[in-house]
Amino acid sequence: MYKADFQLVVDFVRSLYASDNFIPLHVPVFKGNERKYVLDTIDSTFVSSVGAYVNKFENLMCEITGAKYAVAIVSGTNALHLSLILAGVEQEDEVITQSLTFIATCNAISYLKARPVFVDIDRDTLGLSPDALEQFLSSSTEVRNDGFCYNKISGRRIKACVPMHTFGFPCRIDKIVEVCKRYNIFLVEDAAESIGSYYKEKHTGTYGSIGVFSFNGNKTVTCGGGGAIITNDNEIAKKAKHLSTQAKVSHRWDFYHDEVGYNYRMPNINAALACAQLEQLDLFIESKRDIASLYSSFFDHTNIEYIKEPDNTKANYWLNAILLKDRFERDLFLEFTNDQGVMTRPSWELMHHLPMYKDSQHGDLTVSEWIAERLVNIPSSVKL
Image (cartoon, rainbow, N blue to C red; front, side, top):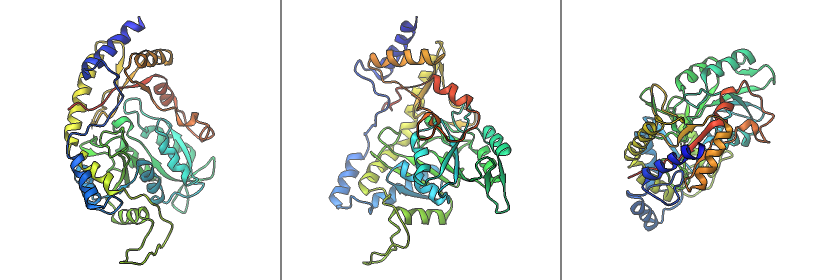
């Protein structure tokens, strides 16, 4: 019974991508000005962090997201790390996030020797639940006379919150913003996977004080490795650019640095690739949403649940996802499809299951556990 049902999925994926060969989970598509722009950077000799394409990339990010400022960063992980520094996170502070996330979210917290605290997600968005956040904060924290929120159990300051738009599905970010404001918690939006996704007609990453994007090789838009910070705050933008360029004070010849900085500026050669990709974003999103529609119609006639965009959202469907009956069926499906040359993957291991985060404080994670037992990502590459 399982094999017959699973074979139908394999056959559909093969028909969707018109291939009898190995079908990967997500591959980049280079059909625009990628080669032209990259060769232009080579001819110009400006291949490092100074160059016209870095500025062009930042302008494109502002145009696409509606943010006032964008800062080009070398990776999404570095962008998260820098954003938490800009948020004022210090050693032994706590940062609230979700356990169902990519490891970069928690690693960025750990780089500052801060501590993650996990709250649950919503089943339909797969992102941090504002209700779970409110419940945790109202029962376990207090705002003291200094204006900051403190964990009544650990005694530590809760400085920031990092919700993620999982697989490109926007979470209920407006409600999370409202909760964080009441508790004076700095909001960093992990929009790494959600370029081209909208919540209530507003681009992801623009609700928080800072939004972070990734342009890794497996993302909807890629430049091999790359990231971006967006914000509407001029001071945050200036500080982000300063810190990402080794905190060097501008001068015609002197090398003077006024604080500890980071080599986090995106190289011009990567930015050239990113610009060519961003020029095709609308085509990419149209293709991915067409694929999602076909998947949705197919799975409507099966016993497998296909995850659709939540209400009030327009998702980029970076990675399409389905839910199996239980972990046993999930693992059978993963084994069968990968044996058949159709790449599928489970969600990430929950962060509080990993050895370095197993002792982190967390609330009730029932939904996170339920999703992690059942979710599988299926091939989601753009078709042009």
